[in-house]
Length: 186
Image 1 (cartoon, one colour):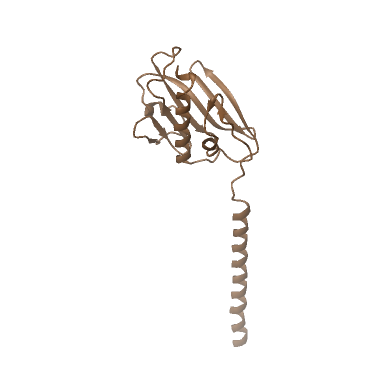
Image 2 (image 1 turned 45 degrees about the vertical axis):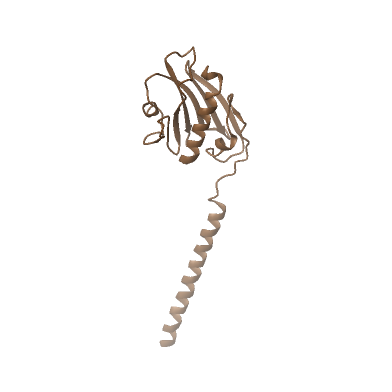
């Protein structure tokens, strides 16, 4: 009985060790193959719907995929939206929208999903989260078609799994400054 008793712990220990090794190997293999983000095989153009912006800043907030397309929408007289789709799925919307003077960026941001509890910049021009943001153009940005209005810029990811506050902030500021240099600002 003592011989049999001494073999069982060794056999059990060996089985437990083999099982632990198999679990560790499976976890390692799945981490290497399945958890890597999909490759971004597309090229982001330097101009999105007529506005020049750094492609690297745009790509940082896009998901992986093979193809990228852009489309301009004008849902009303004061909004221009540039929609980006990856592999046919809408993933990012960059918009320019005119709002009556007197609003604050914090107040305007409440109209856009994903900006709740966003971080407000020190100059009060920008508010953003890891998925969306709103920026106010400089006071000199005026257009005769929109008297007594201010131009706001929005950046909104669309169900992509992207949650990167730094990347959203960089794109929001860059896109706002780019729009300020276009005909949109008179």
